[in-house]
Image: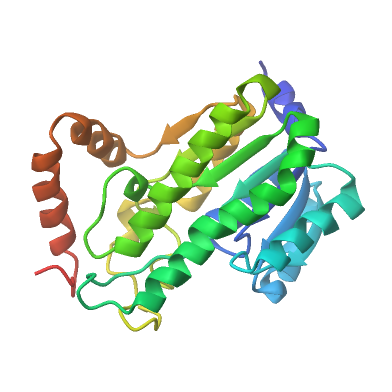
Length: 277
């Protein structure tokens, strides 16, 4: 398949992206705009979405903005209804909206874990539930942007790992239930990515962590992640695990889980100001 044919596969497809105002979500919007898709951008920050809109339209995309907090069921329902009113169908739903955290369970307030589950897990469930009839009609694609933390529990990220494990279990069952209905379900697991998710990660009291504790120059960029995800959607893959460290972590954990517990502990403990002692 040549480049023109690759691009034509996604041309005019109606694609919803949650968490589209920054990071991987923003990069996905630009990647899909290059395919001249019809984009529905969802995020809490409507101003940033509106600023993105003309940039994406210059690339040939038709763009719609819907202010959405995915932790609120009514917002997710409205997102799908607004999409159908405008475009009359849905081909791709990318559940990308997410928040992270950095605190050990002993210290963290339970409200922090609830916020993570409401956004990362329930946001995926709400959007997928309301979009499903239209995705089944179009034989479309559901994507969950998960994490290596959905395969291996990361110390200091109890809520984040729990939400990603839950997301992956939900999406796996969704795929199996719809095996005979041609619904495509992708679980995409980036490794550490140069995005703002760590800058907005929650501390033990629910306040924002602030500056990322990691050197982002050594990470995969959000644009690279977006290319991999769109390519996997186009090829209707079941899952992708990105970065060599991510692939190694998942593989070794299958065979040497106790060893990987120690490795992950040591790795996370080396972060600046790590809550892991």
